[in-house]
Length: 344
Image (tube, rainbow, N blue to C red; front, side, top):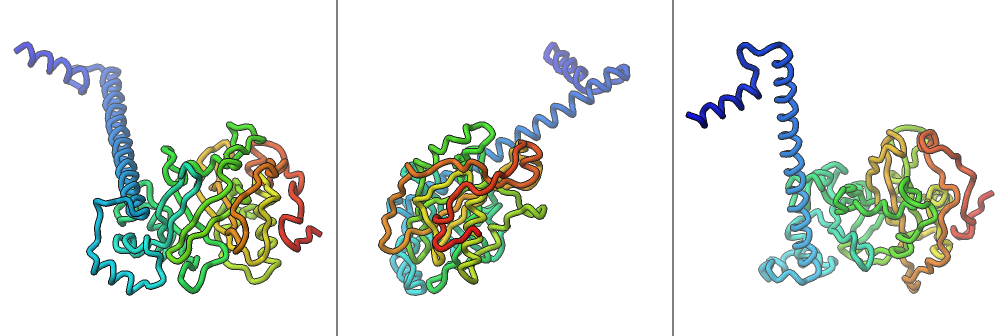
């Protein structure tokens, strides 16, 4: 009987009851609404955390399979032979991955600490892998994915391959990519230590493994005005002038410069792009983008980071200056970085 009375007192305290004053009814409605919101928000948060945790665990398994250390996953020899026969030019380590998903096109790794170390996918649009993992299951983390307009085949490679990935709060996928941004609102703009410890990356396509030297990183606005930089729409270059101007636009905007990484027409570029939600840089649609160029045949993959310096005046978009102040004071790099380029 006592338990019943306690229960009823709790119910009457929470739920509007006959005889309640208007003020008391309003209080209870507000409480119920707040409690319901808390439950929904908490459930949603836990669901997101579980989804991301599951994606990370599955990526770890795939990483072991790619490196040949996953002894718990095996594909019948006859199946591997069939895949290899259908894809004779594909590197052996990708064959088991293609059995899982035919959209696999490569693997991206940055740093000895491998703060980025993921499979890269590509399909016929740029939306699918924003919301699906490599098993094609729905995912809040999505996957790293090449722009569908880029070519990665045995016979052709786009001069600028663009890879998209989510900026996850946990640091997964491209969540740590903005660490290259020395103009971050919470950092000293002269601190380019992250670049200096991560000046190269490896991108292996199905057909070739290549080292790349990072030569630029920028905060940029897209899809909303004349001051956009459409880096994601440039995949091939018709001539040297177009290539030179594209590279110059990157260097103008880059928050750091390294003259040791020169550029010349014919170089292959890799572009890594992720979202920036921080409103300290304006309410517009923003990206942090990293650029690297492929190590040339016969060239040392080493980078002399002692030559690197923070760009004294990166070119930002109009809303950035409206929020943060300042202005562009002109190019902070020398034309020799781009072979045969004339600043005029």
